[in-house]
Image (cartoon, rainbow, N blue to C red; front, side, top):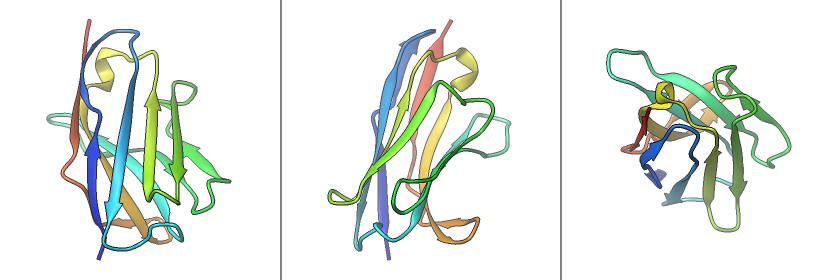
Length: 118
């Protein structure tokens, strides 16, 4: 069982930056891919970034490509999402999750709210 907790959300102006953190406990996530997702009110959950267990492979949704950067520190059991040039459409609750099987994610955290004002 893995317990995830996201942090680092907040209110920023358009063009601002935030760094989200995902802290894992219960067991090591070092052998798993990890993902960041977001969900805005009335919208479906969107898979915005993913990273392989080693960090060697990364995925970004077109909506965040070039502005967001996913990274991980397996020694600390942490995953990060550096978000830059934020836009109002980035406003959402952001979640991290463990890729327990190929393209399947589990052990969702409670999420952290990101609000971007125009």
